[in-house]
Image 1: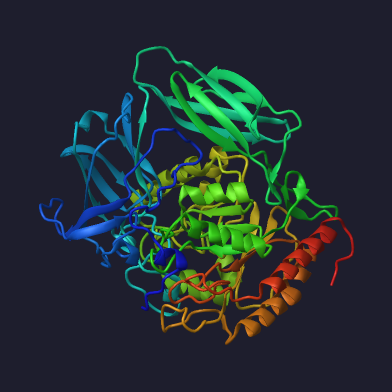
Image 2: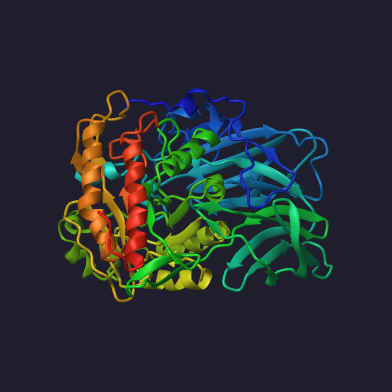
Length: 601
């Protein structure tokens, strides 16, 4: 594979790696970033006395920017060591150590003392390390094991061994720390998490703050201040751990066209955090013709976007820096798209923060896991016959790679963790628990659990093939056949993957093998056929009930060259002006369709 570099990777300052505050939705003044050079070792033991060299955290050893360039295999241990000192004045009452994400299993120790274990490669976790700290130098160590597809952990698009035509759909695996490691000092009793639920129709916001308490005192009150552009618009107090409903008179709605956010300050005793929220509502209702549509803020809305896998040539799942993370969102919004489907990956928290403040809708996939997939069953046959897949029940665990009971239990733990972690982001409007039968099982049960955890978002229960008739969407993946949809009785029709048009840009491809569903030889040719696809299949189906379209995909990735951009983001392969006009006409056509006016050509 040829090593490509983005402009952000080329200018990376190794002394200033991902220094931005990693948790914008719960901010304290106390912050100590531990990114940078760590010692590392890859061996066959849980213990090590020797280290192989330096690794640049938070980049995985498989990523070029890490400085390592080695794949951690199942059975091996990846060891880390970091020596640090607490800055003067940092310590309050307690110190928390945070990991943004570590793939897949790890044990953490500080000064030789056990701090904790964690399983799962996509969610943040933390440990209270107060009792383990000492004056002067502190030694932080951890070992990591990563089994990729050899155990049923969530793994997304990572794969050690790729086989067959559709092997190109999977990418280089990565291991270990791949998001920011940081510390904060807190009070003895401190706010652990805050939950914001917009009550759009009631003109209020519901807030619940949960504290971590170590004293024997009775629970204190939580004090909330809401600010609009720096001006206080509401104050309220309530019990810790209980819902506090705060009216917001004449509130300002959040939408992609107007991504308006309110700030919030929450106090609990001596602890204080800053946060934000948006007032928006997503729902399903009927348009003026009686067709089920998606609604945003009680108005029909078309979700028009791209499949976003979040990979980078020099750094894999970790963007090289915050500017790179911003680039994709800004560029695609400029082109007229309003939605990204974050595909089988939980992104850095700053990604969702940027989508919140810039106005980019997110459909959030649960990363897929399970055992080895029977690609003939879950991919080849459904691509050949959509009817075949829609008739298969997902209770046959062995067919879907879900025979392992503990793996299924872990899926639910990870699903709950993802919803809790991302709940406050107004940009996220839909959960996608399963994609194309990859590790799918009991999808109706997963939907029930999601409804209990989050009543305010849409659910795409089984994205693509193996429809179990639940959720809010009649989900279609269509790459090979003419598209012809019709309104559904109980769910909204959504084209949740389509296109996949490939064009290899000379000098900007990573692999000789090139995967795509249709191949073109220039940007002009690609744009002509993209426009034809929209005029012949997207526009006419909007009139027939189509209410979302997710094109594959944001960028090329390794063997997949079906991106709107090249892998290094240096070339926009489609003509941006043409895409802008197509998107604008789509919104106009949708508006005419839902208002029962004659469509436009």
